[in-house]
Image (cartoon, rainbow, N blue to C red; front, side, top):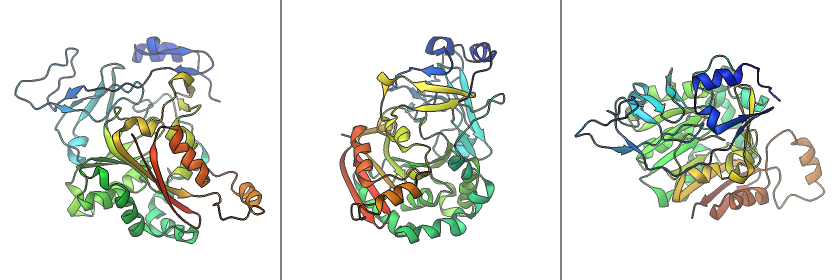
Length: 359
């Protein structure tokens, strides 16, 4: 467990005055800010001064991105649009935390620790693996192709299945969480089905690979796609602002799928401190950002299926104890616990793709 250095309270208060009101320090940093549903609007001409005045004759648009600390919608200064060029040239600021966010290299960094140099993030080994430049490079050059040995039908068929589930939300905003090198993000953009696609991942190198692939494809270079670095357990979007969330071959990569989907007993490392969400404010993170009628589609490896002989299950439990593989019953219960309904699934060997909707 990371412990706060003695000077941290003074440091954070000086840099982010709102911390003293929303946080209380003990051995860990306890966060008890309830996510709210916002309707704040902003345009490319929004000033970052305290009055946040908007110039006349400018169209106001709902700001999609929000602060990962307090969920306050971010004020944007720069050219409008959900594309690589516009996002790169824009600056974002939270008027509540007074914290600024901007594009780093080729992606917009919306993690809790964005812009901080004095403190480092500590993540499980499985998460760090996918931040490796080597793994990011080989992911679409051999790594992903091996998934078919466990029943994954292949990217093209998985994309077709996902599109079937997403039919009710065609034309909306889609967030591809844990997008990796953007294999499915690019397919969603090329389909022309959505008004915007956000490729989101925690790995900096995966996002750089994603950008490289996009730059090699002129057909999507100017499309409505944005690259965002974020933690799946602190999604930087306003409540009820997203139409679709896709997590392809992703749940088993998360430190705890329960944290990301239902935020049960969530712990996030911030500034080398443990940031604990108050239990009375337990919410479903993915469900929170989905609008009413929004669809969540995910796929992952199963620990075992209902057809797996019971005598074999303990052995699979032992072998896979260091992986975040779930059973089909656990996935259904997971969706139900975070308020998602209309659960359906497709299972092939150890592969499962499931879909659920927000009422």
